[in-house]
Length: 582
Image (cartoon, rainbow, N blue to C red; front, side, top):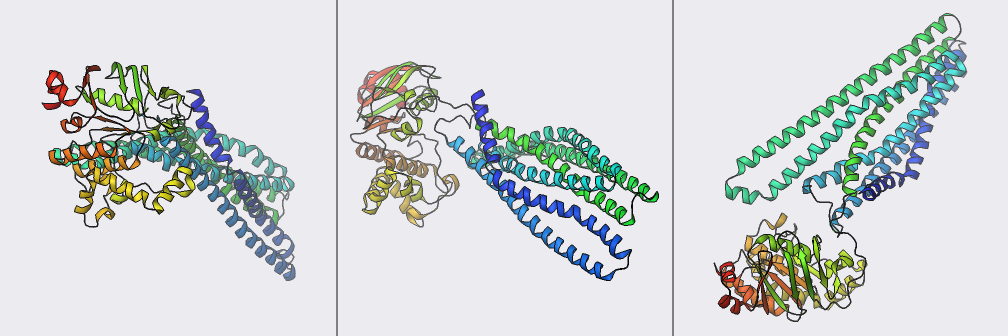
């Protein structure tokens, strides 16, 4: 776990340091701006002493020109510096978003454990944005420090007491501001946690909206979200109160500090230690200091919220993978022989199973948990508690997970469709820049091979009938998650997508539970034909699918209970008949 946490911190550090050059440029321009801002009151004091007091119109005009040039420089330096800082913040946030998405999509899994999809989306958006904003906060802090330093130096040159007040008082103000930001940091973390949870619940409810309506559970769903939303609102209000208290107290301290500078400057002017121009400059600098000190208060708040969000981002990036190890390449070519030896995980309890290469094997189960656990093992979403799973004699734990997923495709029955057309869901978009495999796909598409593969896959899954029933055929949009399609239509499109991929080993789970018996029988024949000569495993209790299998295995009580053809098991095994025909 420590290595994962270190990796998460390293990514966060790189996202900030990666913008060091841009933030450095912004900081330099900002320092020029702050130095100019601090110089303005000084110049006004000089104008008063040299031009106004002496009633010299020529000098007055000269100094007014100098001030005009100064304000032009101030405008451009601020504009360019802020642009560099904002770009650094946005690019750092973008880098973090990519890192989070890469971790979530990592073939080893694990980042999604215990988190709703909406929570992960919140981390990748709001939290990444807050961490990226640390770049702008750091740059602004440097600006403020430059402004305060310039003011202190001039005040020291004018009056040692005034300079010492600034030099000694500023660190005290910063320390107090840091202490006041602690409650905000704690409450900001709680606020983000609650907001992420509310987003996750909302996404979860929207995804299951059709089921909720069918069950008549809309009111219960609304109440659930209302409770979650209220908790999120309460956390947000607590964070807002903490921020308002922090801001208000820091402003009060800052105001007292400015008043002290003005009071000391006024007394020094009364006893003749300061000229009128110097007094005006001192008061002007005191008022100018209000800006940098307020900036420090803002920086403290941003850093507090950034630290809270950074902890949440690091937690996702440092999530332990669901499976570890595995660097070897997948055997080339893949024969497709799968072997399980003594596999124990959830439902399976010491399963020994051979799945021959190039054959269609059906697996019936008496316990759905056995099916789910078996699919997780074959797709290496998790490793068995004991025993091993092998592909062509090589343990899956030795193989690279990404390469393994390309060789062994597990098509779960609850997979989702993407928002887009039916055709786009079945046929992947080839990118010639992605590598040789995709270049071959692109070349195949050019001569019609890819189109033919899609046509065969659609026909085998009877998804071509679905396309013909839609207003614009395969170009019709299916909506988010395929909600515009019926359950049976979605299953056929999902099966067509898996068949179109054409992996060496295909494992499908209950692909026809929502289609009618006639269509199911046709799909079974189409599946057998299109997968002829390649390893195919169908985990289902459907008689139609099991009937076309070369061999059927019954998992009963977590163990292999019987083997044979569908007809043989129907005749000889009562448990099989109950599981499949009941």
